[in-house]
Image (cartoon, rainbow, N blue to C red; front, side, top):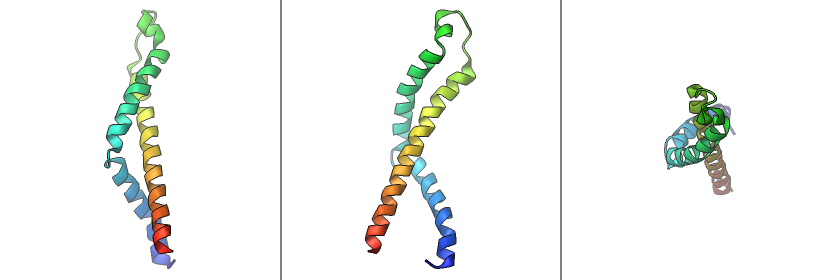
Length: 93
């Protein structure tokens, strides 16, 4: 691979990853997963607040929903990038 193409590859991969993260149904799937998993984690992590023994820590609640959203998005994007790379390699052969 020539040097200019080699230098552009990481940048193109980053652009592709950003495009995949905001398109192709990725945000919707990630939001659905975050809603389910995040809700379960909030109940587990904030159980004392549900019982009235403590106050809700709203920062932790928000982060509890953000983490599954980001993990789901990362997984989806990495899977799509892997499939694109495999298809590109097969196309080149």
